[in-house]
Length: 190
Length: 392
Image 1: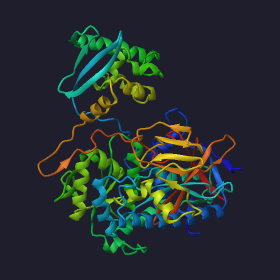
Image 2: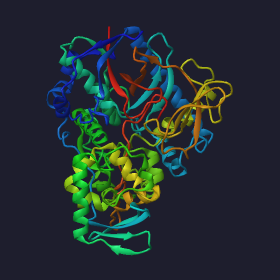
Image 3: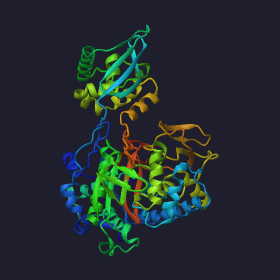
Image 4: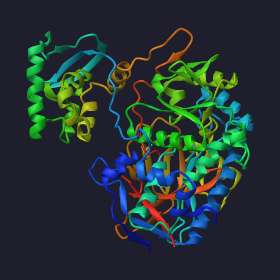
């Protein structure tokens, strides 16, 4: 049977043996999500007392976060306020008490202000230094989606942060915002 | 009972040095099982024969879809119909590889087609490389696997030029065409699967380059270019249906690039016909009661347990197992609820002592050429495990 093979045979006939010794050239770097915009304009709404959701966000030259409170007031958070909130949230992430890193079935009801900001793109930029702790956390990924007022805000936001660029005759930048699923296929699945 | 043989787990540093960085699942458990499934030569041979037969049937069914204009019926986006027909008409649009997901074949169960991942199959790295590495680590270099995937891909890459079974004329006919390999940014599993394919194409003798999809420029007149250099051959591990639904401008550009013969794209657009689970229904229409097929319909099947699944989906998303009365027994949530659904008769998978279900993935590159297994729950999700094998 031609297709039934031994490693010794196949390694001698092809580069498989070398590959098993050295790996695929240039394969070892892990890719992280790329950000193209420098900042973000984020609108956060208080949906219940002390609970917040992201209503909308756009790429922007510098980061601004607008807070709409329950009483109808609107104000822009200052850099000092932001720094303080992120620092506080980072301490919670370290202590394992952040809403973002826990399984959080209530996340869809809104989260605290610090968590909501970290769930936004702005948070991902401002708090890049704590991002590594959040990035691989599945609860963070889930809660982050829940931090948006509607699912479409989330996907629109993800898309607009990776704006396609284009030139006169050629077009490019396709799938700039795409983070596609992996391991296609399943027992009865895709 | 399944015959499983314990092995020494591969060191994660070694796996990373190979480029296999997705060795650990989100729940921190190893994605690679430390057991090998032991099967007989006859079982391996049966997978080989079944897969070759299924591929021929799939090709017949796709031809039937094209001749009878059934694209809409099997959920093909309208903006890909032209490029699918165009790619079907000319042999240069050669199918590089696909993976058949099969139930049975072990433990005395009959082989049944679950689906064919023909467009953007993963689990390539695991099947072609990792399960060999497991044998190597345990000093089993002289043991057999149904696994000629690596060399089958080398040969099939060469066929892009020779367009026939015999690949010996490749060196003579290859005229230096440049080959670009592409994935999306931010997914190391997909990127390294593509880099592995690029590595194999380089070994076959091509001049190759890698670029992320958003760094590439497309033009109906000038073709596909990256860093101001044009590429005649392009491999993308990006589903055609995503191109159709999310980047319709790109779908149009690629259609024109192919019509103007500016580049050849792999896997070809027609593999989306193979990939659609709607084709499972066409297969059943053309080959009713075929022993390798499960009854499949666009409407719920009457009086039998069945699986409802979207025509295009990933990681088991939006898949449900229904009982004979149509009640939901088990389901996985997903983003595909709005897709067209098919209903496929339920078949019991082989299970181990822990009750985990085993499914075979047989790779096809010109012929059936490599086998791997995955184990998990009844509906596979993204924490299923890869299981290597040994033929005794």
